[in-house]
Length: 128
Image 1 (tube, rainbow, N blue to C red):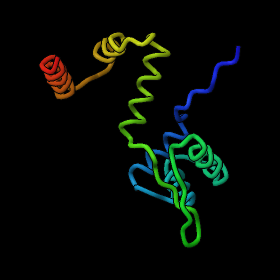
Image 2: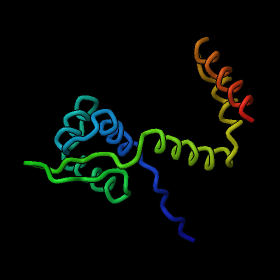
Image 3: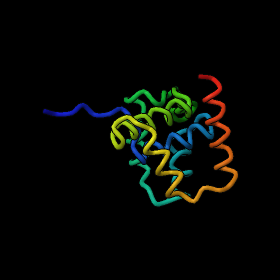
Image 4: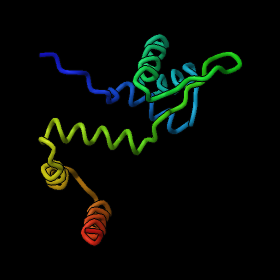
C-alpha cells in the first residue's frame, strides 16, 4: 500500500518559507541570494522548490515588473504547528508528553526557558 505524501514542507522548503515570512514577499532571485549567504545552492533548485511550495499551497505568485513575486499564503504559526503535530504523530504516536520530557531532560534549557515553560503550564492549567 502506498502512503499518501504528507503536505508538510521539507527542510529546504522550510528554509525558503522562513525567508518569505521574514521579508513578506520576494522574487526567486531574492530568496536565492538570501539562501546563498547560508550555503551553496543553485538558482534552479530554488526556482524548483518555490514551484513545489506554490503547488502545495504554501506560497502564491503574482506578476511583478520583471519577475514573479512570491508571498506566503499561510502564517508561520500555522505551518510550524502543523509540523509539530506531524512530528508528534509520527515519532510519539500522537502524545506530546514524551517530547516535552525529552526536551526538559536532554536539552540545555536556560533558567529563563524553564521559567517560561512553568508559566505556560500554569496558564494552561488555569484555562481548563
